[in-house]
Image (cartoon, rainbow, N blue to C red; front, side, top):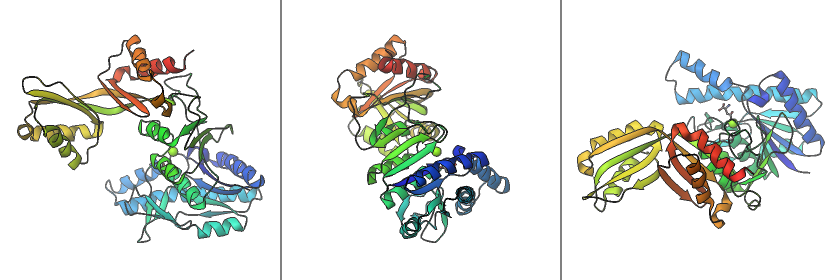
Amino acid sequence: MALIVQKFGGTSVANAERVAHVADIIANTYRQGNQVVVVVSAQGKTTDELIAKAQEINPNPSKRELDALMATGELVSMSLMAMALDKLGIPAKSLSGWQAGVHTDSTHGASRVKRVDAERLRNELDKGNVIIVAGFQGINKYDDVTTLGRGGSDTSAVALAAALDADLCQIYTDVDGIYTADPRIVPDAIKIDEITYDEMLELASLGANVLHNRSVEMAKKYNVNMEVLSSMTGAEGTFVKEVTDVEKLLIKGVTKDINIARISAMGVSDKPGIAFRLFSLLAKNKVSVDIILQSVGRDGTQDISFTVASKDAPQVVQLLEERKDTLGLQSVVCDNDVAKVSIVGAGMETHAGVASKMFEALGEANINIQMIATSEIKISVLIAEEEANRAVAAIHDAFYGE
Ligand code: ASP
Ligand code: MG
C-alpha cells in the first residue's frame, strides 16, 4: 500500500464535469489499495475573481482580509470534491488548510509553510478516508488564515507529502508534463520523462510556468518524489527527483525570459571598490541582479552592464542617477527590449561543446549575443527581445533536431 498525494489545479476542477472526472481518478487510485491525500486549487479563475471583487470594494484591501477572502476559493473546491467522491461510494473528508494542520509564517499573500501537524491527517487515513485538503492556505501563529502566493497549491501538496512521508506527490495539471521548450514556440518540443530538482528550479525561475517554485525547493529539501501529469489524458508525466539518467537527455530545456532589462552604467571610474559600491547599493534596495558584464577599462573608466527584472529597472535607473557623482559614472542607459534565453541540463557539466553548440545555433540564425552567463547546469545569453522565439527554436533544433 502506497501513500499518494494528488494535487489538482484550477483547470482540472473548473466545473461539475471536471470535478466528476477528477473524482474518478482519485477513486481509481484509492481502489487500487492506496492511501490518498488530495489537494485542490480554486475552480478555474476563481482566485482572480475574488481579488477583483476585493478591489471593487477597496483598491487597497488589507492583506489579512484578502487572504481570508482568497482562501475561500479552495474551500469550495474541497467540499465539492468530497461530495463527488461520496457519490462514487468512496469515504472522503474535506479539510481546510488549518484543519489539516498547515502552519505558516505571517507574510500574508506569500506565506511560507513552517510545519504541518499531521496527526489529524494520519487519523483520517487510518480510518480509511480519502482526505481532500484545500490548497494554497494555512494558518499563522495568531490563528489567522494565510495564503502561500499565487500558484501555491503545488507547495501545499509537497508540504503534505513531506509531512506524511508520502511515496509520491502527483501534480495534475492541464499539460502532460515538462517539455524541452514551450510547445507554443517550439511545436516539436519533447516531453521529458525525468528531471532533477535543480534542473526544475532553473526551468521554473526561467519562466517555465508549470510548478510553483517553492514546491520544487521544498521537494528537494525533503526529497519528495514529484510527478507532473495531465488530468485529461492519464498518461505518465514527468518525474521530478534527485538524480536522473543524465545520458538520456543532455539538455532538459530551452527557455526564455522577456521580463528583464539591461542597465548599463557608462564611464564608471576604473578603481577598486566601485563594483562593490554599485552592487551593494542595489542589494540594500532589494534589487536582485542577474548577468553582469564589465568592459575592459579605457582612460581610467569602464562600463558595467547588468540585468535586472523589468519591474525593478526604473528604480535602479533612479538610484544610479541619484549617485552619479559618488559612483563616478557618466551616464546610465536602460534597455527593456532584451530577453534571456537559457539552456538547462545537469549533464552539461561533464560534456564539452554544449556552449559552442548553443552559440553556433544563434550565429547561424544571425542572432547577436549581448551577454553570456554560465553555471554548472545552465547557460544563458542575453539577446534582443524580438529574436527570443526564433532563438529558442534555433537552439532547440540544434540539440534535438535530427
Ligand atoms: N488558487 C490559487 C491561485 O490561483 C492557488 C493555486 O491555484 O495554486 O493562485
Ligand atoms: Mg499552478
